[in-house]
Image (cartoon, rainbow, N blue to C red):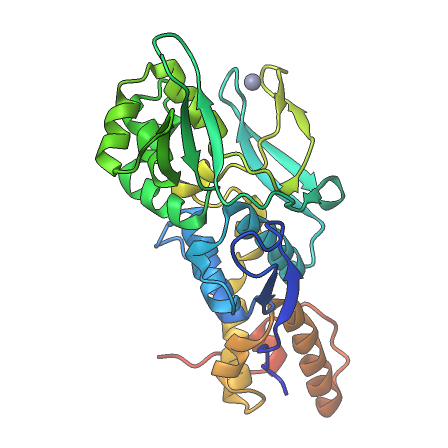
Length: 326
Ligand SMILES: [Zn+2]
């Protein structure tokens, strides 16, 4: 019984059956998968984090095929449930002075928009001087796999630079583009698409760059914040797939909640040592239930020992022994 987190629940996804099942079959976040959150050595992007977590807990959809909007939505659910929290803390830089502001996003401010558009691809009309015909970019909505491809071709420093060059922008938008339509003609070959885009003006490329990451479904918010440095009112950008292609998670809470991960694993080790639970099974425990299970185990042992000691024990105090020395 203990350690069994193989129970899958169905969660309705914002993409609402557009390309894969309407429902994600997903487990609660187990201790073992949560270890990925603490992997500062890997220092991966948020996209990599999503993919590594979902490959452990999501049964019916390949993680890299997830629409970014679905992945972000699922992550807010899984993460908040695992740590029993009702808000996210995120960092966002001010448009004007660049100062990083720490923003608390309460869940009640977030609503979810479910997709009603059955069109697999979206169209963007490229307009502007020098263009004779009707030119459209026909593109997929952003997926985790697009972020992987873009992430390989660019760096954080390049994206952070406000003077985005065509090259960097192209690295981001290319993976999403299916074809370019000029009148009745379709340009399908990747190198021809790149040539064509390369001939556009930088302003036209930047306009495409603004539109393609946007999703017509997913978690929505309408928050703004006043910069603590210059007081400029910024619109809060809650949902930016491009940033997550190359940056670490923006959720500050993730790091806070994992400060004590080592202690948690030590507890698993003691559970194993004293025959309460195998270490493998401990890693399978859902994070949301670990606290409860630790509490019950502690109370049981205290009763057995006739001790009245209060909460907040370290594993050493809990089990009344010192850890073994190697
Ligand atoms: Zn500012």
